[in-house]
Image 1 (cartoon, rainbow, N blue to C red):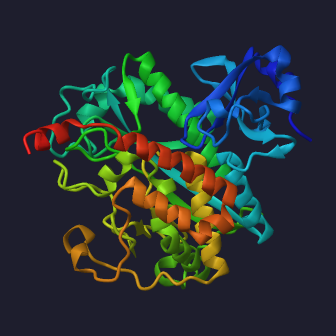
Image 2: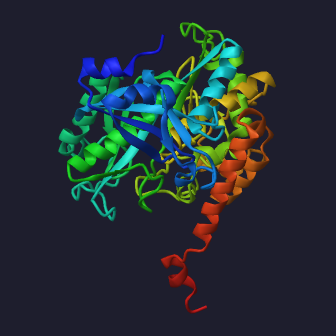
Image 3: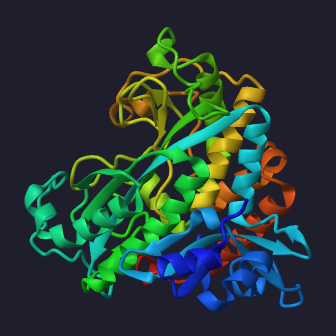
Length: 435
């Protein structure tokens, strides 16, 4: 029986609800609904004009309704009289095929049909910057190798612990926070869960981190590459597959190579098969390609892949296997849509198992030093246009994620590329003004 949001509002003293959804570009949209009206919204949804968000719609489309998922309810830790709700989009009595949360739920249903549950955890990286975005917020954070810098971490103690305490209160079980490899960069980790739960929490984490940073007079950015010489913001995912009860890890096999089962390697093979074409979802912005194709940073490494390879416990590859029973996909960045990145992982993995895709032999080399010697390894796209074109042609994407979603995403991303192409950068003026 569905949870009664009206009753929950009375019990928890919630006065308003944010009924929200994420569009194709990862922008969080919402309506603020008083608790007195939540019963009707729970049944029928909150109305939106789809064209007003980044969805492939026109002003002539009928009303679009965001139907909240009661299981996703989160009271804002800094303002508990407001409850946040993730929603699925509906139009004309049917789910909206290009709704990112709907796309993910279709992959979850496809996995469930085979008796599987995909579980993931994410590593969210972000920079704390000044209000106008021109520099990091901590002028004393200047080490050439600032990763794990205790002094810089403790100078931001109040902000980081406010976010961490909020996650503890929400029951996410956060377990570590650290200063990352870029000056002004941080990462916060919480427990893995079913991929939909992880995606909902990922959406809320970004909203929460930005909001709390603003309350401290700062700004948090998940932009893939906000500063030329510094490491970019990744969003690595740790992936495992479980039985329908969620109690048995089907990736774990103590007799398997590096503790992974045959099924795990087929799933991994599917991810590798579609990695170049799914890069459009994992790395969705023009700026993304300045992270995965970056030159060496001031710290000495980009920590980002540019080739489709896998290995053991080695961070220079796109996929690493750090422990038995899981693998880490290191391709995604901070701009990735939380729902679409999970949907893409699941779709690629399910395709890998269905077609028994072989990832080949793992490579135990330092990709940053020896990667150029590989002759047959697939390279990741060099820019967003190449990535979107690969995605458009992907049979796996169209079969697993759906033609309507793929076509909508490609159409809007090509419009974005054209907008970028019409812009004039300072680099162009500096280098070609006198040609």
